[in-house]
Length: 276
Image (cartoon, rainbow, N blue to C red; front, side):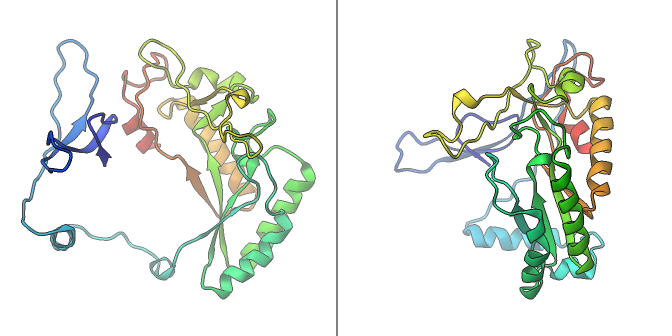
């Protein structure tokens, strides 16, 4: 929900239309920004509006009552229906600061089990190339650290704990070696410029995102077949290390891509990102 008059590429926008800030004259819109070639037409999906005089809790009651008339929950394993969540463990901070060594994971898993948590999510800098201070691709690095991670994952799973690897497929920096083969797959604007999205984090500067640390980070186009080939390889590599599943950071791309050579209609990226 976007509060204001500058909507994103799509979504529900709420705005107070009253001239007097103390008054309320609520307006709303379900906003889309389709890109149409000359002669093309577009029609939005149907929108249903229900008006009542109650408060938020009444709205939620009405929504739940409506939901039960048509929605069927997916078949979910009994264990997941009673799980209280998963425990996220950052082995390193976003600026590379070490918080935990891989060897600590089995003891952390045992502590989680004592509190009824059977799912861990591991954040390892080697899987976040848009944050790495070096030029190495995903899951490449110190052989001793990788060996320690494999051993730790094996011990965690032996205790009956599911452990997923948090991996970012979407962002890539120009300094990373992968840029040589995937840079052309970065998203493009309408003018052909490469879209930017950077997280040059630092815990040692006055500014958490200091401009001097900029590495040139860009989102990849998820509609491109070459991105998907790279993504499948990364999934296989992550599972081969011993993770039982993946936690994909920034899964879906919401911004349109105008690259003419990515194999998708101009501007159409969101649907393709859902497909992969």
